Image 1 (cartoon, rainbow, N blue to C red):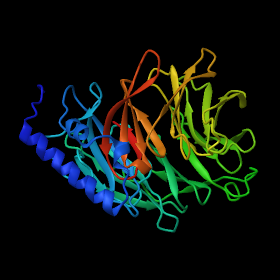
Image 2 (image 1 turned 60 degrees about the horizontal axis):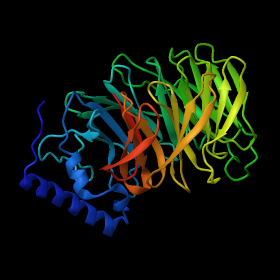
Image 3 (image 1 turned 45 degrees about the vertical axis):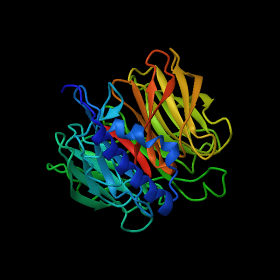
Amino acid sequence: MGKTEIDKKDFRKGLGQVNEWKQMNMSERKFDFWTCGLAALTSFMMVGCGSKPLTMVVGTYTDDCASRGVYSYFFDQEKGVLVTGKGEDRFAEAPGAVGLAEIRNPSYLTLSADGRYVYAVREVADSTASAATMSLDRKTGAMQLIGNELTDGKDPCYISTNGKVVMTANYSSGNVTEFPVGDDGALKPHDFLYRTGLGGPDSTRQNLPHAHCALFNAAGTELYVSEFSADVVARYDVATRQCRRIQLPSDFGPRHIVLNDGEDKAYVIGELSGSIAVIDTESGRVVQTVCADTVNARGSADIHFSPDGRFLYASNRLQNDGIAIFKVNADGTLARIGYRNTGIHPRNFNITPNGKFLLVACRDSGCIQIFKRNVRTGLLSDTGLTIVLDKPVCIVFD
């Protein structure tokens, strides 16, 4: 694709559309638009082009806001901008989006290995909580809901798959639901529930069982579950369902988990402690805890490696919102090297496969912020560019 030309008429039209949307949200939704950057920058983003773009899929909260479900975009990972057709605004509430699947509160997503299916939780605190399957056309970005199965658990907040089964971590009921995957990619009714426990000292936030993450290893043979209220990571053999429990420091509140490439280390972000625990997976021992949240906000959220595995990033919410940056030492321990403030409530973030950009879903700023990443140092710089979207909370790339 050649270089896209932007004439003045198109620019004024795009700027006018964004300003109209801005005014609607400022008056009706008390939307913090300025955290999302200038409208003119957003207009420039929407006409980017370059090498073959990534398909980017974004989950949102839909209650009491403009968002309507799961949105798809095309993103140029070389330039750090959206790629859309000329004047192509299909969804007024989501400038630049190319697809939409309407579903209530799809707060966490994962893709099938071939990128043809999107699995999403429907995060609600009643018996209608479910896991949805959507088909994804990777050429057009179009999505279609093809199935929905009840979780038998409240407030599912995490979803993952190994290709054979899909797991949801159900926060408010403290269980994990296992769904078989059919030949058509859709989920079948669940056939097993994993339970989590208690034991943490916080009488308000750890008084009931809570499950916050259910992560497969690369082979799909093991499942790591964060037992938020027990300060435990449970490691299951998927075939036998036998469990090995790894005890974390008291008042840790484990949230999300990542594994290094060799899978000899697991890294767990503590929502309550604001620290990262480094676990030796062979011994089950915590070999290091390192601080991600220096202000004790008790709201740490997400954690991801850079694609080359040399750096680790963790998001913090509630106070001093931002991304803590760590270098990964040769022995797998971490050294903190920086911090980058973000918009309000960075619940989730993701890094482009080429490692050049880090995108942050700022739930309460109503946008996805785009940071340029120095692949040599791991540090982040703000591009000033954003993707306008009400209550974005999950970003995945195909």
